[in-house]
Amino acid sequence: MKKIFPIIICLFICFSCKNVENSNETLKTETATETTTEKPEFAIVIHGGAGTILKKNMTPELEVAYQAKLEEAIRVGYEVLKNGGSSLDAVEKTINVMEDSPLFNAGKGAVFTNAETNELDASIMDGKTLNAGASAGTTTVRNPINLARAIMEKSEHVMLSGQGAETFAEEQGLITVETEYFYTENRFNSLKRAKDREKVELDHDDKRAFYDPYIKDSKYGTVGCAALDKNGNLAAGTSTGGMTNKRYGRIGDAPIIGSGTYANNATCAVSSTGWGEYFIRSQVAHDISAMMEYKGVSLQEASRVVIQEKLTNLGGTGGVIAVDKDGNMVMEFNTAGMYRATMNDKGELTIGIYKKNL
Ligand code: ASP
Image (tube, rainbow, N blue to C red; front, side, top):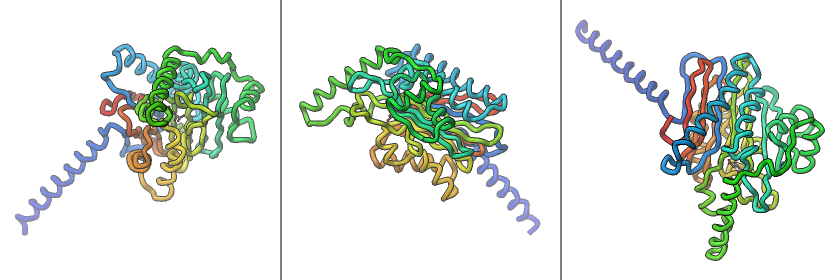
């Protein structure tokens, strides 16, 4: 017995070491930065859209430009959080940086509708109060995320649309612009390509470009942010121009609370990007929170199931970024890439574009 005892101890130690190795591997996975040790004071995660983002289609200059803008944006939110500011402020100010850049399909870089207009959607949610604000189909508000927040905080409504939303924005003193402000050559060319494609599709099999694989394979480019602040409050926000060639006043998932954006201090904060129709039908953002709330699963597992199984099985494409009440961050997507970045309370930054590159 005396001889067997040390052998049992050795076996036990070896077995424990193996488990530590395995959990370290989990920490290195690309789509999650789960921390299993102490809870961070604050955390922030952003996306700049998902889609067929392939290295072979990207110039080095463009890649650097995207990385620089993602970093600039997330550092703005990081500073807010580091200085004790609210997650709502961090989300709004971070999104403003991306809205003001032509690189993303939000604010300045919004895509064109079939009628050659730009119609913008946005939403924001406060995880502490479960209050939320959203605007849909605006054409003159420079930063729709600011409008969404004003709707949440200064109106008795959750969602305003079109001209009414613009009137409210003016009453609130938000910056408005001429519609030409949203013109960018790149986005206009994308519309032309979509329309050309549509002609071909209609000639052949009566399908519309908006619903065909061309759109499925394109880049979405919406922007979003989720943050946890030092007071334990979660917030999420999303801003977009929608989808190229959209028509008939189409509204996507971005301004739909529960689809494009959701935040609840009891669970997590989520922002989505992808083919909006599928995100609405799957209630992606709320579904992740609900899985955590009702089934007690981790944010990582809930996001994986919702994106890789539920959304994918339905035929939807895109992804989410999210942070939970313990500061765990997740970036889950079923497309070739998603512009994304995270920062924790130690100031550690990760930036990713393609699937296996974080
Ligand atoms: N989800 C957005 C929409 O369908 C598009 C995007 O994510 O870029 O309007």
